Image (cartoon, rainbow, N blue to C red):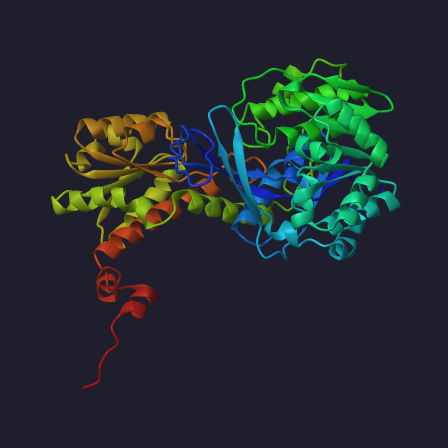
Length: 543
C-alpha cells in the first residue's frame, strides 16, 4: 500500500481550557483565578496527548494524520479547525457522545493541575478501529498511540493492525499502570500493548510504579528488557531524558529555558522524537531535537505550537547534526498545495461556523452586552443620538447596523468614516454615542475619526477583533468581534471577521430591543412595506 503519511495517531483530542492560578490548591481550598493580558479568564486551545505531538511533528515537516471518534459539537468543531491549522489530515467519525475537554490550571512557575473528560475518546473500541480505520493505519510509515484516555482494547487493536502491516509503532504511556487498570481496561491488555510497541515513551510516574526505580536510565533499561522494545525513552523534566536502545544507553540533557507553561512539553518532545527518527538522525541527535521541542513548548501557553515562532525556537535550541527538515505544510488538509482553491467553498462554510462558535464561547450571553446597552440607553434618555461608523468593509456593516437598530426601536444614523474629518463630524453632538467598527482597531483613518469625535464630546462603543487595539483602549465601552481565520486560502480578505462584527452588533440590537419591549405593532409601524410589512400587520377584523 502507498504510504501517504509519515505518521498517523490515535488518542486524546482535547479542548484545553487553561486558567491562570496563583498556586495549585488542594482539597477544600478556594482561590481567585488570574486573567491573561487580553483580559480573558480562560484560554481555549487545541490539546490532547495525541493531537499535541502530531502538531509538533507536522510543524517539523512530517506528513501526519489523526483518526478516531469525536462529537459533532462545539468542542469537536474547534478541534477540527485546529487540525486544519496544523495541517493534520483527519479520518474521524462524528458518532461520539461529545468531544473531549480538559480544565488546566497553571501557576506562575509553569506548574499545572489537569482534570480531563475523555468523552468520545473513551468510547473508542478495538472492533470500531478495525472496521473504520485499519486502512488508514496501513497508509502510514508509523503509528503513534497512547495509554491516557483511549481504552486499552482499542490501543491493542491499533498496535496489532500496525504490526500486521509492518508499520512501526510508538506508545506513549502517559498515566500510571494502576490508573490505566481502573479506567481503561485489564492487565492483560496493558501488558500486551507494551509488548506490541516498537518504541515506548512511558511517564516517570508509570516507570516508578512498574520498575520501582526512580533513576530514568536504569528504569529504561529494565523496561526494554521486560518488553523487548527497540527503544525505551523516558523524559525527566529539567534533567532531560534517558534512553535504552541498541545504539545508545545514555542521558541527553535538556535545554535551559524560562517555563511559561509546561503543559504538553512531553508531547512536544514525542513529536520531535518521531521527526528525528523519520529524518534518519542518530538517537542522540533525535533526542536533542525532541528536547528542543519540549523547551520551545514550555515557552508558550498551551501544548500545541505557536505557528509564528515555535519552529524557529526549536531549531534555535537544537545543536545536533544538521537536519534537513521539510517545511511545515501550512495549507489546510482539506486543500491541495497545488490548488489552494480546491474545496475552498465548503472550507469557508465550515470555518465561518466554527469561528462564530468560538466567538460565542468568548463573549457568553446577555451580560456581556449590558454595559454597552446601558451607555446607549442613558444617552437616549438624555436626548442624545446613536451613530454607527466604519472604515473600508466595516463601513457597509455600519450601514446595515444603523438600519437594523432603527427598525428595532433604537434610532441610529450612519456616519461616513472618512468624511467625518471633512465636516461630517458635525452630525455628532456632545453626549451622542458612536459605534465604531474596525477589525484591527488600528486603521489610520479610523483613529483620526475617533479622535475628532472624542474631542467634540462623543462617547465611543468600539467593536474590534483586537482586544488590545488602539480602538479598544480609547473606547468608553468595547465589544469583541474577533476571528482567527477569515476562511479563504489567502486568509486576508475580510469574510469571517465581517460576520463576527454583524453577529456581535446584532446581539447588542436584541438587548436594546428587549429593554424597550418592542412589539409586532411597533415593528410594523417602522417597517410597513414589503413582505415583512404584510407579515407583521395586524389582521383585519370583519365587523
